[in-house]
Length: 428
Ligand code: SF4
Ligand code: SF4
Image 1 (tube, rainbow, N blue to C red):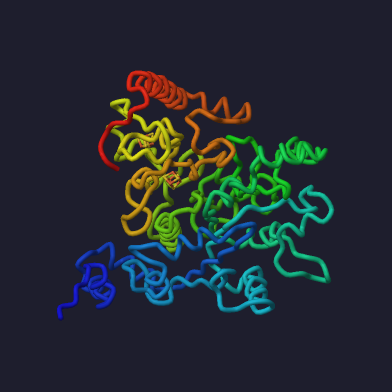
Image 2 (cartoon, rainbow, N blue to C red):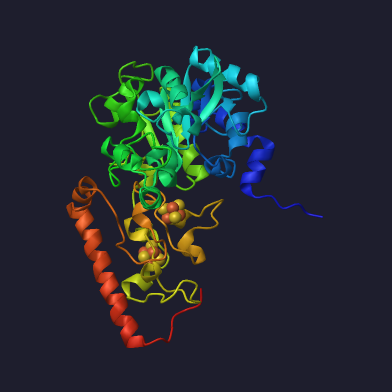
């Protein structure tokens, strides 16, 4: 019986990638391999207030996948080059054993390391949260007191060569930092604590949860704005400095890979870029206004959507699940205002993506998520944004998007009138 192998499986099985890289067929690969094998770099994966969804997405990454990176069978790293000594969800150690590794990281025993953040960070007492707020997110305790996630971050940041925030929660606070649900619900109960936090620039989340980066759409701060230990990263994100190299104590890169969850390939490719930067092999990726790599988050979902022809023709679904290939704009698609490639290239190994499978894009790679993108199945624009966020949105590009949205909405309404209740179009 013949065994069928894909090219990728064949390369994996035979170790051909490594063999080819040593045959000088590609100078760049050879140089990268040689340099990468000359020293190891650690990835310290810190989960705060998260659901581990980004970790789940990470282990679905392809080309390379996580095993290839850690085993050193991908083209750019040698065996043992990239290590993952701390990752709460997948590491074999637990309890005191796991905490010891984290303490060793803080003491410099795992330098150099790239710090990956997953989940949002509740404001602890030291940062202005109410008494007891350390309990919203803590890992271990010292002298009978919980050590808050924010406190661990204070300790980890001084040694981190770079920070990567994976997922919307770690990037901008995500669903955990929502304004609407918390403020509406707790206002009814008579609490105004959340309004006080909002005045200080924190989210109205019951936990005061925020991301590493600020959220310009909802108008609240990020961890990078409030922690003194984050200054080298703060100066980087506000373009006050350029890192002279990976060891620069005054200027260090921080990159957002948002999503709910962030796609595994996007996470690994950003990490690979940073690891090769730490090794002096690649420049840092160019970032957009929300600190995302432009090589991933350049075009919008809409600009790359297979339903774009239906949008252009003004052919819109009238209800979610309508069995047609029509554009999903009128049933709530946020593709026109969301920068993201995964709908086009597929979620796992080329398969999946919301509008390709009949669902709407919900805008999960954007700041303001989910506040500014709900209800998911209501037509754009349905936004509650800060004055500052509104000003930002009303740039020439923002206006163009808004105008396109309004026109599409008018067009959808007009077509609906013309067509009555009857649906038409191709099959899904
Ligand atoms: S509105 Fe959504 S479904 Fe329609 S073309 Fe744009 S991205 Fe695709
Ligand atoms: S296509 Fe939309 S919903 Fe899917 S990952 Fe991208 S931004 Fe999120």
